[in-house]
Image 1: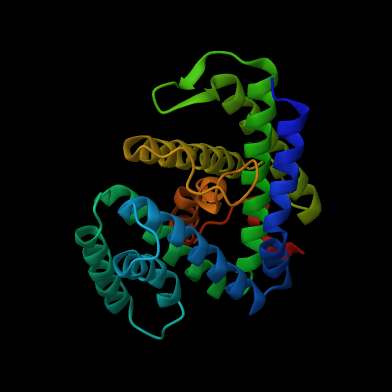
Image 2 (image 1 turned 90 degrees about the vertical axis):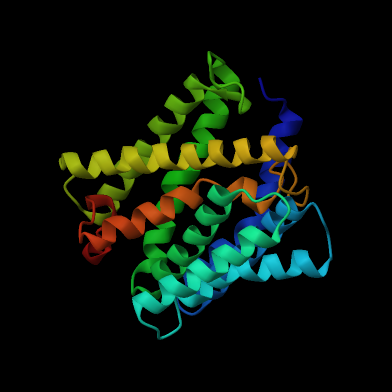
Length: 266
């Protein structure tokens, strides 16, 4: 069971992210600025993880290469040109760092450009707020259900603290938020595909968390940084979005929007 001290440390650490959240709420251009700060923060931690170095020219270059895909989304280039540039950035990042990790690099850079694409949309910041509510509810639910109820381990070789009970509790809390969003939007929540997509978002968010935990274990790292009390680093806090953001852009490409993200109803 989590101690009261641990709980309050996590609460204090959560306050570090409030400026980013307020920026997203404010909409364009503040949401773009907040998204850029988040990507710069995440990629800084990732560059340190991949090189095992601090304040070196190579680390700084990898940091730049990892962050640039976010800004590509705002450049008036064709899709083919953006894909080509992204591929070049990925290739240089892969060969320049000590620890390779192509899956981690690719997912981080893909999430970065997907966040940029999302924030170019008129209601992109609102979609991001809804996603943050659903993903955060899953994180909080998993933490409390897992600590309070325990149960069999979800992936003991990757993250010993995570349990199946926590995963189920996280999913339950996320779906409660989806239900609340449907009431706020005045949407019909009887759409099976919308609920199926909500479950998929929850699963992807938890998978992103496990994926980052596995990368850290391979690299011999406990936390991406120690900057945020009770949370580690920004990458530890936002790892679920690495897989959720590409999912959101993919579903947008097929022109489907679940009921809990139909923000035109507001």
